[in-house]
Image (cartoon, rainbow, N blue to C red; front, side, top):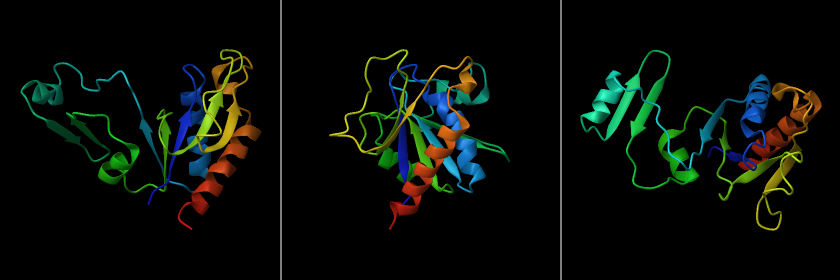
Amino acid sequence: MIPIISIVGKSDSGKTNFLEVIIPKLKEKGLRVGTIKHDVHGFDIDKPGKDTWRHKQAGADLVLISSPYKISLIKDVDKDSKLDELREKYIDDVDLVLTEGYKSGDKAKIEIFRPEKHDKQLCDPEVDEILTTVINEEKGSADQYFSDEEVERVAKVIIDYYNNFNK
């Protein structure tokens, strides 16, 4: 089974920025990484006027677009899917899945905490399986929030979790 780790934190804590720095580090260490982004507000990836958009407008319940380089699926659903369901139906060919969001899910979590913006952390250590907390300290520019040492430390935590997941 493919392990899932949720990157969580309050709004504007730096979750996306952190994923942008941890994914390349994990790939550098030989892991194939997939991601799932949770969006409680809904989203639209199709552009009006494009063929796939026109297919959906015509009433297709599912549209899949394929090229030699990527595949994208647009499918109507009647409920928010659980992470285990998404992994089972759609995820393969990766070693690890990192999510952005799913703060109330039952997966292991890495919390991004930004003390300049938030009074307290999001996770409850009595309820959540927290692998580690990453403090997002402002240092001038968005890509400098997470030191190389911190990224290396968290990559080790993730790799240790991955190595112990199916034991």
